[in-house]
Amino acid sequence: MATPFWNKEIETAERSRLEQLQRERLRTTIGWALRTPFYRKKLAQVGIKAPDDIRSLEDLQRIPYTTKDDLRLSFPRGLLAVEMKEVLRVHSSSGTTGIPTVIYFARDDVDNWTDLLARSIVATGATDSDIFQNMMTYGMFTGGLGLHYGAERVGMTVIPIGGGNTKRQIQTMKDFQTTVVHITPSYLLHIHSRLGEDGIERRDLALRKAFIGAEPHSENTRRKLQDLLGIDAYNSYGLSELNGPGVAFECVCKKDMHVWEDAYIAEIIDPKTGEVLQDGAQGELVLTNLVRRATPILRYRTRDLAFLHPEGCDCGRTHRRLSRILGRTDDMLIINGVNVFPSQIEEKIMKIPEVATNYQIHVDKKGSLDRLTVKVEIYPKLFLGEVARLEALKHRIVEELRASIVITPGVELHEPGALPVFEGKAKRVVDERPKD
Ligand code: DLL
Image 1 (cartoon, rainbow, N blue to C red):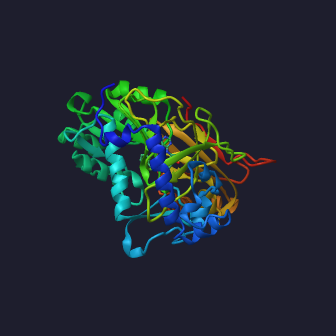
Image 2 (image 1 turned 90 degrees about the horizontal axis):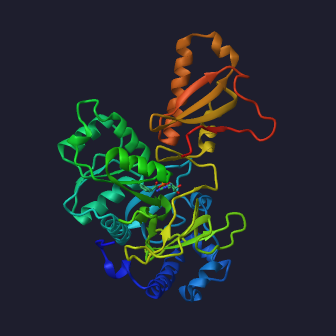
Image 3 (image 1 turned 180 degrees about the vertical axis):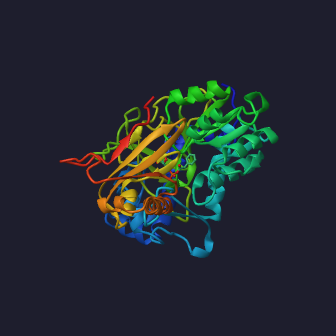
């Protein structure tokens, strides 16, 4: 399929050239990693004391995995490989508990990441003539600023509107004749359901493409979006720990996402044994940074389940394709693109003295958006008091939760005994979102 390239030489490089690049960059990355207290210790345990201790790509397998807990325990500077003065920007993961996972970017890191995003955007056929409305949240979340910089580098006209405020989003799409949006798939479905409300119809818009990501979605959801809106929708995958978006992105062929292998080494492992699996086999995705100096991360266990396609792609890019994310190995929930761990919710509500011992986390869909409701049992005497006090308590719980998980949940107060009791392992999460 005829397709434009941002950096044709790299994107279509022979496998041997890519691997040579990976080898060189891995060694450089080891050098950076050895500047951090965390990796100095971790690598010393397996006898890696200098970049030259890594000779081949197979040697990567000597390096122990890095986990989210490692990052949390290294907070705030255990993984910082440069002087703070050199750090240009800080991002963190949206699913943070008390201790965030923080990623530092030096100037060249921002530059390299921006380039990966420019490359991703161009791979979808978008150009500098496009008008790009970035509906992802700005701030510490990487979805906003990441694509913003990439789109500017391509030369698109960028509308940095950020997330939420559906009316304004639709009005803006009309006013500026937006052609490309960056958005979570659930929010795009929601936007579609609100078209027509203020007299703005699909025909008033110039939309032709959407970059959808930050949350799991099926091929059926993509098709539905494409059919409802008459657009092309491209899957985009990434995670804050490895920069954010721009780890893997679909090209014009829309047959899963190219992992940019000059910037990342992707491995699929058996999540139980840690054994590295062959292309085509499903397992947990493990990623290594190759071009990030300020916070180099080696063999990061993403907890995302996927597989790598063994065969090439019609677009001519040689970088292997990552399947859609098929699930998670942990209990992380993704609510409208925001990562939430049940433990974050428990930690907050159990601190509130009025809350009794049982609670349930309920997730369903209202229209096309995810809805989170936290049901808590409270002590019976509270129900004897004024309604206003109950309302105030509910409000307090909502506020406590919002401060921790970034989204606003619904909260229901129940009398003790109202929620299901489990004799064995408690089933705290009821996820009723349809699996299509
Ligand atoms: O969600 C980065 C991002 C922003 C990606 C915008 C794409 C677009 P985190 O908040 O750290 O970073 O969440 C990362 O979200 O480990 C996956 O579980 C999930 N995720 C991200 N993209 C996809 C996708 C951003 N396309 C976590 N499909 C990851 C399925 C996704 N899950």
